[in-house]
Length: 171
Image (cartoon, rainbow, N blue to C red):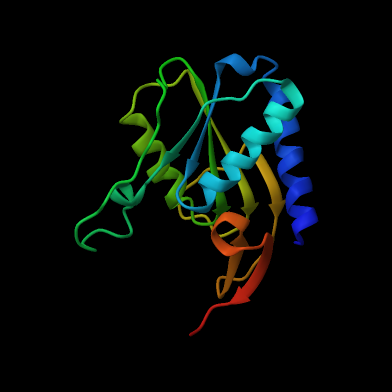
């Protein structure tokens, strides 16, 4: 995807969120570190542009909740959710939905902060090969991939450019 296609997909996700939740006052957006945070910031920008109100934005570090990274040593948790999640509709945002393990870890990490009224999941790229069941409520692009392929999402704040590439993993 080109940077224009990335922008269009994020605008569409923002429109879909607003269509489903006319009342922005009860929404909160939480991005999963690292690229999910930057995608969430852009979604908040577009929601503010469209609705005139900016939902609160937080960032969630799910590293300590990953079941596939146990034993990797000490974990530094860099979570910042500067608002109460109680009774809010939280839109959890990530860059790629693949096995489902990151979103599961995100739900676990979010549950430590309180009990939202509802949690929805927005993902920029959804691919197949789930190990844990679950789908996103909002999807920028669905991509059929082989298990030997990797999706690379670039955001300007981290990578200097915006786009999506499919790369073959090194064997």
